[in-house]
Image (cartoon, rainbow, N blue to C red):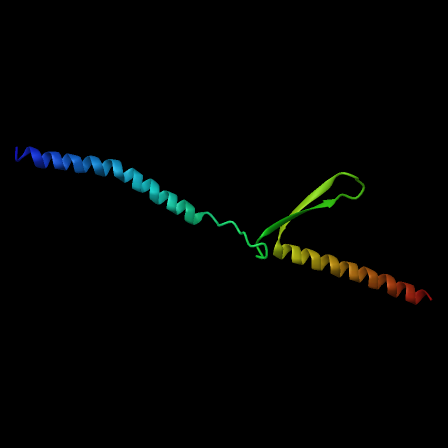
Length: 100
C-alpha cells in the first residue's frame, strides 16, 4: 500500500502536466499574437488614421472613385492641390497683365 500511493501520485501529476502543458502553450501563443497585432486607431485626428472619400469621375454622371489615405497623406494632397491651383491662377493673371 505504501508503494502504491506514491506511484498513483506520480501518475496523477504526470497526467496533469501532460494535459495542462498544451493549454498553457496555447495561452502564451494567443498573448504573443495579440501583442503582434497592431491596435486599430480610433482617434480621427491621429496622423495615421485612414479616411476615405468619393470623388466624381469627370465625364461620368454616376461613377465615383473612392480614395483612401491617412490624415498625413491628405494634408500633403490638399497642400499640393492648393499650391498648383494658386500657381495656375498667378500664371494666368500675369499672362493677362502682360498682353495689355
